[in-house]
Length: 313
Ligand SMILES: [Zn+2]
Image 1: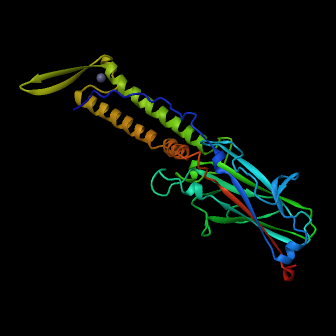
Image 2 (image 1 turned 45 degrees about the horizontal axis):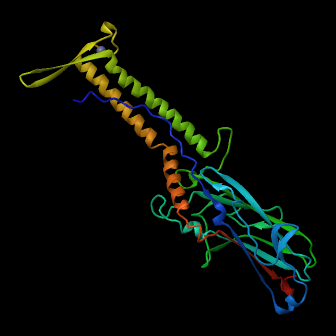
Image 3 (image 1 turned 90 degrees about the vertical axis):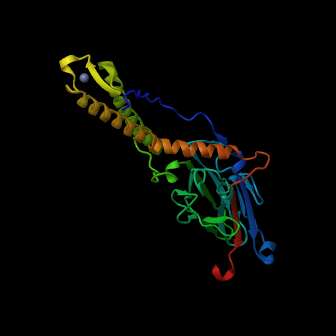
């Protein structure tokens, strides 16, 4: 029987400052369509970062606003769609394409994606379900080119209105491991909660490890061999006050229980959500860092404006 386990105490580890800059993951493009007749009239459908920075062709829109992609990071970025007082009524659609994220492989098992979640909001445009609430990369249904419709709106002819659309993002691993948790409460976000649970499990383990280790401080272990048979006895340093009883059998049983409890507490630490998040995040960071900066891969936003046909006006 082995009594010599010495348990190592657990030391808290955290992920380093690894992060991936997002500038290779952003792009905007726009498309306009309309009949020749409409285009002969004033057509001034435009999209841009700000009211004084509107374009009728593409402009650079970084969903991540140049924030580093790293665990628990999040943010938002907005753009404006303008009818530009066009002569015709306009309806438009906003589509998103995250094929670049879906193509990143080597995270976890199978089709596991970077642990990013998104939602879309707008004070005036219609945001389509389910993209008006946090969605993960498993939730989207794309067309054959990888686009999915996130928002739509309309402008009357001669409208000078502008509609703002905001894309929110969050590195939230809980949508990919365990149970999705979009809440940030006083207890913190999904990771803070997992870290708190983890710290409790570490404390439990460390206490049990200390108990198991202190068994040897309280006992002198004596091994004697009689006729080739090894016999283990204990000399209690604590004497009659020993909490583990009087007999060697009691001591063995007590120590075995300490070992079992410490082992299962260590399993609980190693299987905790925090450890699972860390493993997934580490893998995702490595995959994102492996993107070739010389070959920018981009999240696409496409805004398609078209003339409302007369019978719809
Ligand atoms: Zn004892």
